[in-house]
Image (cartoon, rainbow, N blue to C red; front, side, top):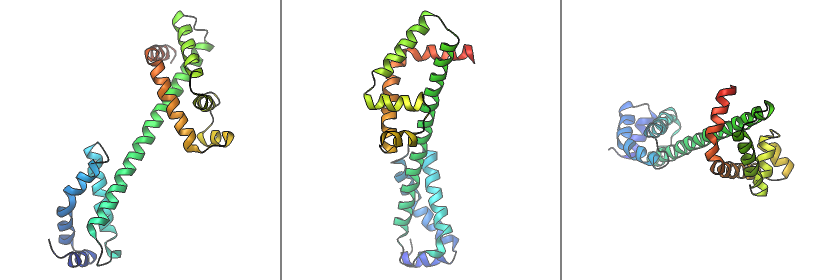
Length: 195
């Protein structure tokens, strides 16, 4: 590999061979770095590719003394963390959708007078599970699920941060999921009947 300053100078002037040299020098290291954060190889590859695209797009603004390795390292790390954030949002969204579906199925069964032993048992178990939540989790869960308030609105009403609301919701859903696991199949069957 050439002297770093010369390589940066060539890159700044638009040299594709300088870019290729940097790419081949750092690609594997950066892919390994990204895989320390994300589990999917495709996500890691994308994080690395985006870093090289950013390097190329910003080449003209680089200082000749720029540390290319650190530049790419920082971008790949940030890209990988962004992938994790997106995945967390998607997972949280899926969890919220599942619990909303459960709530609506539960309400639909109640409105339709679904009078089976299974429904009565399910209703009792859901009510018990919600009432057995720790106080703050229960309050936040009810405000979110039954009053359909957004996290921001709950935070304002309870005079806490949105992060605190999110933490209580995550804990509530985890506890309810564990408590109601044996009954989730009944909810799915009933939702198929009434959908």
